[in-house]
Length: 415
Image (tube, rainbow, N blue to C red; front, side, top):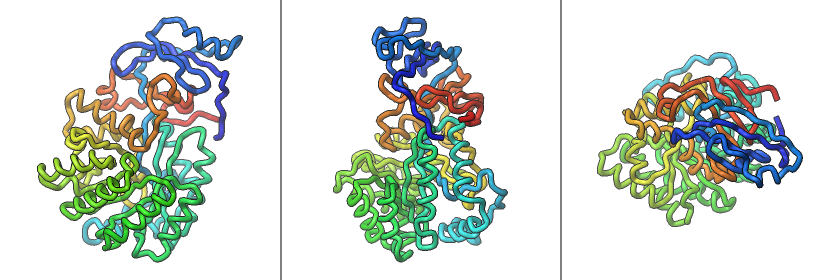
């Protein structure tokens, strides 16, 4: 999958419909937007000067809506069975239980296709739908050691020119309750993971301070970010969010810490939520939600209004936690809007922002967006505007990576 973009390679994209409804032409050099101008204007003089004598390719987008590539902010490349044999869902014996689900996962993975193959299937599903940046959590514990990390690092290297991937060293079986995991997390960071993960410090490890001590110490040691799974609800979940935010503030890690799921923010009183939103915004802690069907989830509108960065991801795709998931972040925006009661255009645009610009902020992607100097990573689709795209979820899309078409109609093009 590896591919380089020549600095002299130039393309002119005609008649792109921007989010504001205007038509524009893109002038792309070496995989980056060199200029963006109203449709029909001649290329800027410095565009031709970059590669004298080179005739740029011209692609007419025909008035299609053009949007930034989607950001898949939370996924598990190592544990999906997408493209593998169907795995019937095994229900928990007494309500949702993380430990029981982890046990089911181990049982299923023992009989699964090779991990690299399953990860490739899931990656190409996401790219085909328009995601060109991703954060994947990768399991690290005493039972699997670093094997998952090593496999997914190799897959990331193979696909590095097709999609940008951040990896989270994820203690799926806890840290304190799984002896040796803290040391494995340290080794995973040395191997090339980008963030330190965590899992339900209170209910899983039953030691909030001890769990967070390890996570934040490793992040400080490696100069890395943090992304913690937090399933606990109500007051217990809120307490852990407060502890994470306090440490983030004290350690000056604003913009580098995320809490994934944070179900507790979805089942607390409005006044407590307002205080939590103010606290999270001040600390610079982002919240990830995939708007799961059977859980309370963080109120997107209220948190955004407070200034919190709310982003999203597919989370699990056909794995041991649930059989759903299609790797389509535009459809995820639709789900978020539907479950949040978003009807007005501005609300639908907010749902879209969650899977694009807000996701880029949460992942620290400075190169994202349709702007001069940014990487020319975008999606073209038949829609009149963003609200219609969120509602209609058109599948006939073309995905461009650094100015080159890499997927069309949901399929990665031959490389």
